[in-house]
Image (cartoon, rainbow, N blue to C red; front, side, top):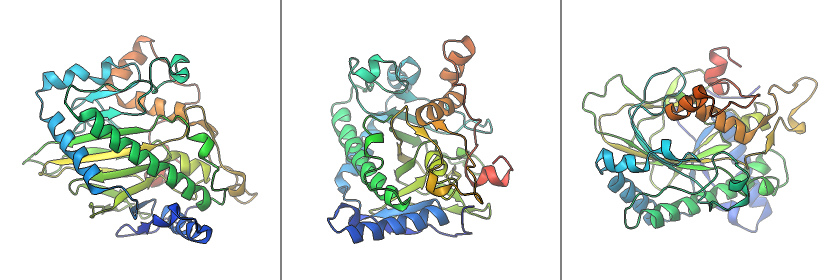
Length: 347
């Protein structure tokens, strides 16, 4: 069973050592990642190497896009995409529990050409991005995506060591992942008291790399209490997702989190790092013993992600209802992971 603590603030892990030639230093960082993943499932990452101006330009482009009239933004509506890319208007996404979230978003991923073999094969959630007609949006948002995805691959190597695996274990599993970057805008709302920005959930992928412009994020600790996780300078927030919970047989917990509605305008940029679509994920042998049998079924990473996405987006629900789409046969119900699931007796 996980050792999730009744923490009151998130730990800080300096990951600069993961990029150095010193094997002992990389192992030391991995040990700190393992401790944070077991005890909290959420932590700040410093020493990441991404320049501040890259993040500033991302924020500037997001502000320009979300300031456009609704009709302009709807020209790149996600419901017109074949690979889940584009603008997400308020109310389009409804997470577990059914409440409509107060936010709008823009979703993108690996910008693959239509003739890429994975796209021609029909792999869900892989394909070309949809770009709004803003002069530098594609270049500056794309540059941030590439840099953050590179950090994600570094963290994958750290998590491999943290799980007691070879450092390169995940390298062959993250060659063309459906890792999604979301640009999220929470509009100014003077009547914010009691309203949620994003409902409680876990992230469906392996882990998430987040930067945001204002407080509002809340994390559930091991006692089921909600703890503030405000942004801090020169740090990302990283949290464990469903797939690392499965691989570690529950040693790492996909921490439930939500966004408290605050009156100030807020921008948030999560990159959801996942392995390649058809990766089979199941508890690693080193975490399965007679005293601790496998607690999770084997899942296909992309199928889990796509199924959870289909549950959450209105345009995909309509495609399900019409028979245009079908849920994978092994699809799990929403909110199957994390401490909230445990407190509710779901898992």
